[in-house]
Length: 312
Image 1 (cartoon, helix red, strand yellow):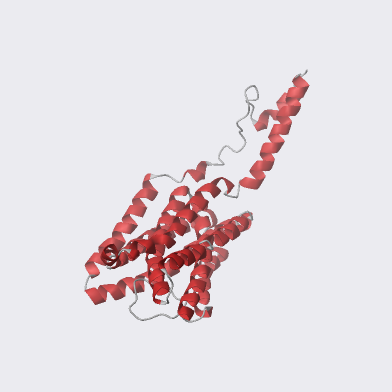
Image 2: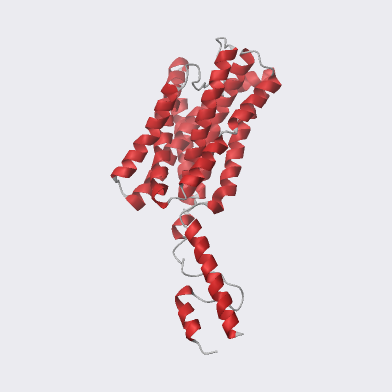
């Protein structure tokens, strides 16, 4: 019996070591949370349904831009959190800097390569859009959703707090964008039902990005460069997409103070949450030599050899 117990113990340890080898540098345990966040972001594609009711739609359309300023504040803190994590583990190495810059360069290249008319919209437009404009817009939205999925996963690598904070920022951004795209589709002649369906189907491309990123983070050497890549992508969105929109609306409406205040509200809320909830992942592997075993097997791996040497 002691020999059998030792064999079972050793087999259990080998199994745990294999699982640890697979998962120690991955986020398989975070996949349900990532998928939940991605699904909530996908639901933003249905936000246009609210605007099917004219009175409520008119009231909300003039307030959508508030979400842009909030999203910019959230993304700014997310960039800081992501880069703080990378620098703490990797320092400012050439690979980290290159990955950070690449995160923005890739988005810029995508923006330039996509056909004209695939750009993001940040509010209902009054000029007419054709069916070709709508199709081009959907192509662009699909590509950007894939990118959103890729940069969402590394945020969860840092911590659930940063991950869900990132998801909130993407959600705020997507709410404005999806509502605007709903109007484009309606102007192009699509019915309310078909416009919502097309928006939702295109939003599912975020799952392609999530799947690709999950595969990439299983490669240990790519974990922190991918986080840096994600930070660069978010900074690009803030500087190239959100801030120009905020500045334009502030000039048009002479509401610079309001937009600045909303930016700092978004940044402050994200910073408070990040500080209040510790990044528990720093301690996940501190005791990686200790395992939770069934009753009667409460042994530490380092002492497994002692068990083998014990006479039967």
